[in-house]
Image 1: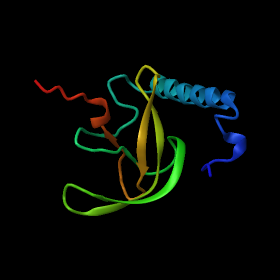
Image 2: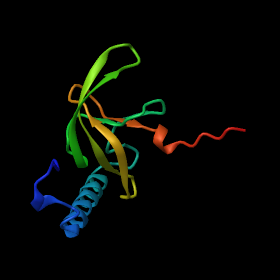
Image 3: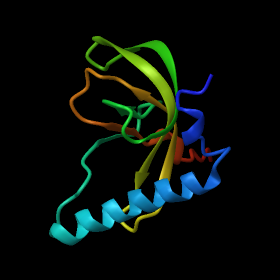
Length: 124
């Protein structure tokens, strides 16, 4: 069962997907025009050791399914993830970046972007 209403399904209504990304891009452009370029509009922790990107809520997700995953932090504490899906953030140039296997963790204070999916390890 999809975590969204049928009327909001991108597969059934591809035009809704285009409209969604158009709104994201417009929002990013509006934010950029009102802020100095020396400051980040979207702040997140970048972690090259993390396996999953973490978000506090479903705001940036285009697909989502409920789950219950316990995560152990570097300090040994554990937190619970409530959902898994694909989140979308925009680059500075407005290009959407799809973050598959991202988690919703309501207890976090700042988003965490896992860099490991973007890194290629070269073994000599």
